[in-house]
Length: 479
Image (cartoon, rainbow, N blue to C red):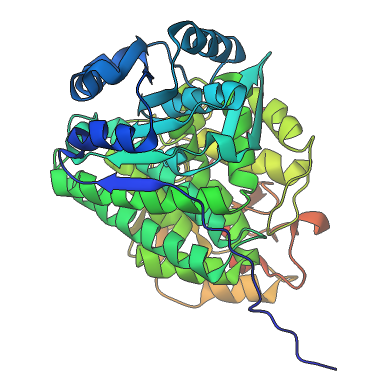
């Protein structure tokens, strides 16, 4: 039997021109002339009026008008009004200045009338590099691909992201990172996309580390722009998976902030998918310089005061089931098979926020982080509050769990010297009394054998120690 050729692939390079550098918006007049555009409609959100003014000043008489009403998730009625305005002004193209909202509106106009789009990003969304469009109507977000909506020119001017608020910069960079991360396990990926994705993630992680030390670090913002460029290119060249499906539902159905939702969901999806995508996991480990990519992504988001969970964005607990059901309503590519139970758990985890900070997007009950101790006697620790935190079982091997029917899990807990201490809101430590295996999300008292996950959600031959687990001193989920 002939050897399987596993390295065969098909890669499509998307057309377009990129101008990159501080002050590069000054090149706009010449670039518009090169594209044959003489009457452009400038699109932006109400909050990007200053950036739009810079475009108008640069392009001068080539600007037919400004439409400053762009909104997240591109409501269909708004897209219709923008398209009508373009016709009224006799516009021959659109210049979208801002983040994904403005670029998305430009794509909607292009989808309707075929007008060329020029994108001038002021965030790290990355959508400017893709032929992907999205429209929201009646609480549902529709997406598609069309070469007409791919911007003909993208101008990355570092000066335009200098004033981007720190929290927005962080969540926007994690949004871009999600594009690259899912491209690594896309069914239509290629070695070219994998190289772009890994480098994009590396640049974004370096930028986020630097911004955590100095929120005004302009070179770090330049790194983030480069990372967004590469990551957006990955999004444009491949099919996205579970993470993007969840985020589209969160935005279209609940109206949650786009970038912040991406930042909250990505760690939970990576923790679920990476065991089924070893090459993607290896690439992420290299790019992030960390053996636990999901945890590292979560940590990168902690440089902002925004809650790490969807609850902090206004999502209600009861919405978790609604979102999961809508995600599962239509098929999509994913490296690991998913069912309603698995998606529900992922959304619940994103709702709570991995490695929660005290009081940040928590489930009912007080929450705090888990810290490592040196084996203090359990009798010295109070047992007074609910503590929830996502940790890796492999880092805390001395948890006293009798797992007679799961020798591998028992051995993992017994071999080593680490101990686990939970910290309540008064700063007191206490022993953990329950363990929840991430595959089942069912609480088990210490001394009991953790339950086996649903067969449909576990990979063939997979052991429970290959997953993250959640340790509790209280209830797992609200009833």
